[in-house]
Picture 1 (cartoon, one colour):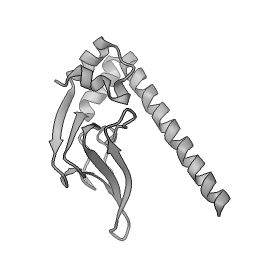
Picture 2 (cartoon, rainbow, N blue to C red):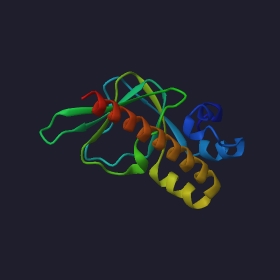
Picture 3 (cartoon, rainbow, N blue to C red):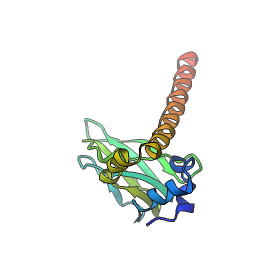
Picture 4 (spheres, helix red, strand yellow):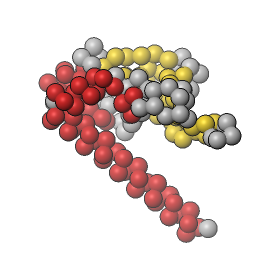
Amino acid sequence: MADKSELKKQMLFSELTDAELDSIAKKVSLEQYQKGKPIFQAGEATKGIYLVKSGKVEISLLTADGWKQPLACSRRTRSSRAFGHRGQKDPRANATAIEDTSVFRITADDFKSLEKSDTILMYKIMKTMARIASRKVNSMNEKLMKLLVSY
């Protein structure tokens, strides 16, 4: 069981009550990855949703010609984001610890179970996920507009 005070520091869980954090904490495991070790690799289903507690994770894709294309780095910050997307399989995505890293993980099955058993808790989590995604899209749009205007 994860420490709920540590979970509260994660943006995904920041709006949860103590009782809701207790419920989540029972489903969260803490995993350690040494620098350079894969968290998941292309072609594998992820093992759930991951949140960086400490360290740094690189998310990358393999291009059609086999080159690694870094997409993002997740580091533990107040606005750190989840990765792994509930156990979905991506034929090209990789997640690799680029520093010694600790991550919280909720299995895909536990996440699905919470969706069915605690709709209010899941509403809060999904609302936070939507807010993060919206900010990311707005940021990408701004960067694209700056590129287009400067071209």
